[in-house]
Structures are given as C-alpha cells and as structure tokens.
Length: 293
View (cartoon, rainbow, N blue to C red):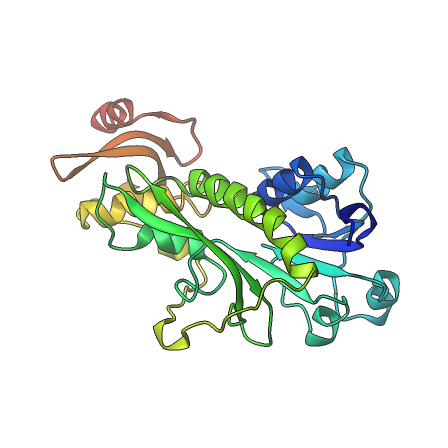
C-alpha cells in the first residue's frame, strides 16, 4: 500500500510522541488524524495549555481530536471506522479493545523499553532508577508491539536496542533518544507490517518487569540517603515531580528542589537548587543564605 494513500491515526500526547512524529514525517508518513489529550492547566498561573502533540499537529496542518472521554459514542462516531492503521505512542489513556480493532491492520504501539522489561506507564523514569552502573554504558531500547487486552503485553513486531553512554541520562534526554529511535524503527516497520512481511512474536512473559505510577512523594529525598539513588532520582524526575528535600526555618518547613547535581568519588554534589518561593541559585549560595538566618 502506498503510504500517501494509507489512512493512519496517531494517538499520542507527550514529547516522546513528538519525537516519533518527527521521524515519521522525515520519512514521508503523515497521519490523517491525531488523537491527543485535551488541554491541561500548566505553570504557576494554571493556564490551559495544549499537549505537545497538539502543537505539533497544528504546525503541520493535521486535524486533531482532544476527547475527554474516548469511550463516548460521540467520539467513536467522529473517529469513524475507515482506517488502515492506528499508531499509539505515549497517549496516556487505555484504549478499548473495540477501538483498537477498528483499523484493517490493527494498532501498533511504540514503547520505550526492550519489552518484556519495564512494562507500564513510566519506563523512562524506571530505567533511570534501575541499579545500573553509573557513568558506564547501559543498554535500553524501543519496542513496537501489536496491542492486546493487557498493558504492554502484546506480541513484538520490531525491536531495537540502544547503548547509552555515561548512564544515567536525564529523563528528557532518554525520551529524545528513544523517541527518535522509535520513530525511525516505526518508519521502517510500517511498510513491512502492512504488506504482511512481519510475523509478530509473543513476548517472554515470565521475564516481564513492571513499572509503577510515580507520585510527588517519590521525589522527596533526605540528604543522608544513598548518594547513587538520590542522583538517579534527580535525573529521572528533573521535569516532574522534581527531586526535593525539606528543611525547617523557624516553625515552617521549606521545600528545596534540586535542579542539578553530580557524583564525585561516590558522593552526591549538589550544584543548584530552587528554594521554595525563590529563584534557582547555586547550592553554595543557598547554604550561605542558611548560615545568615
């Protein structure tokens, strides 16, 4: 099937999705429709802001749907059924089986791990938090799978490893590396999948590992905690929920976000912080301010 005549809908929301879309576009694949999350409040002013994918779609003139409820009859009627392929990359919601089965060639998912490792919603952060050696090479990768009823459980259509040097990267860095790799792999895989030249292989379910939902509480550290694990948290959570410690000033508790840090001879060296209600500053300046109070 000629890619210009293939009707594809893309489901995605995050920056990872945008990196996948960038690579698809570079290879001449443009979805006919993009489904993404509705605007969410962001920033101190809690201004309703579109998803990264919505911004990408608008810049490329591709129509979008931003449903609050993807099971509603109104959404399903608008979506229609005349599709060749759905692609899902970090959409953020569970899509029903009936919807996944709409396209002639099913629904492919781009997942940033070497499945069956790190199934679930937080594979990027969870990979960084793993007990992998620091400042050495570490293998991760992306998987393209055919979605089934269970989370990240379906058969593998394509997979590619990536060796990351100076592990661990920041979450945003790993997201870009694997999103770009996932988009490149997807562009090569789609024609083979559509033409029937790929036989999906079942995952080794007995080797599966699972990620958990991350909360703000996960980002709290004590400066006496294990330096390596604290460093991993700073790298994994640098966008959200942002690693922090608390101090007491008088009868008040202050939250201090760690924005940059490095390891030196196994010790955690904090480079910069954002004290609650203040600007980002060098950690040395923050410590000096503490002494003067």
